Image 1 (cartoon, rainbow, N blue to C red):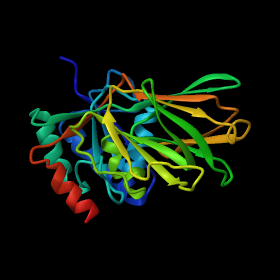
Image 2: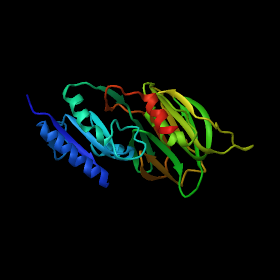
Image 3: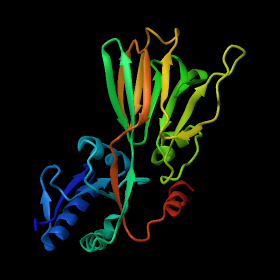
Image 4: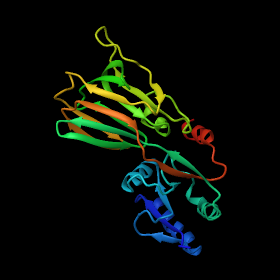
Length: 268
């Protein structure tokens, strides 16, 4: 039997560095190897930081299939499972295999512009918006059915786990992570005699595809796409197709985990 190996990903705050050092001591005392770099032979990724660090970890490790345990040294910590004071407890549960796995499916955007097709992956969300305070004018199509001509600051598509992130600040709905759904939430939609846009978010099955087609007021302008804290600029975008990704991320949840208690504790 090969020895258990854990890769530790951490941000560079003082608390995170101290937590990493303590975790290494706990693991070495139990003869658990600590990997210097991540590869698929690793049994577990321990991510130390906040939600932003977790998202960076997942992207830098190329959306790993390896389970991830989050150790919160940040602020909200929706993805993070335990506090630095719980390291011994966590390792005991891990060695006894007393945990469950929460599977997260990201979303994928295929952006078609003058240079070809570009893929973006978002664990929380993907946001399409105009550049330099310009409005984005987008035809929104669900599968093959046009549902609105949107004009406003932007349009956000979020996953269930991402419903507590940017989506929530835009007034979108909170969605239990067990619900296999995506959410379309407008950012500052324009409502005039010329343009009528939905002002509320739309919750829809994750199996559906949303297509955004740029209209004349957007063609020739740049669009900014933001995903999980990352941004990319595109010029002369013709369409953006957003679907659920085939990849998935596995979060380790320890005994006693309660999503609703965490939601209440973090947001109220």
